[in-house]
Image (tube, rainbow, N blue to C red; front, side, top):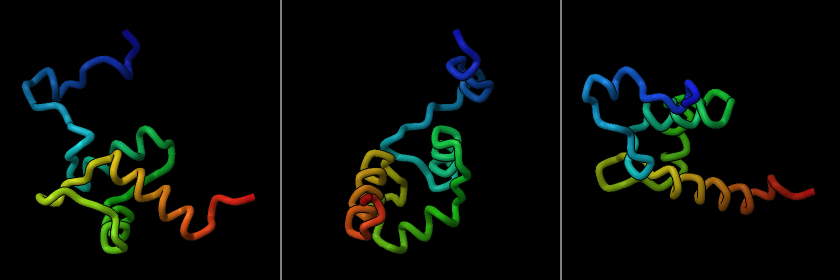
Length: 82
């Protein structure tokens, strides 16, 4: 097993796993930073939420819905065309 696939110490101590369908803003920022290779801050996510990014009823973020919103925003803004 590679180190990035090994259980984290938190999981070994009985903490629940993170759900990509319901992440708090801070957890979502950490996950996106880790998988994207560029820093994502709580403030960046909160700005996106203020701009209309979807959240669950309890304020958590579904990463699939958030990614879909980002793609839609990119296409509306014309940021992706050559």
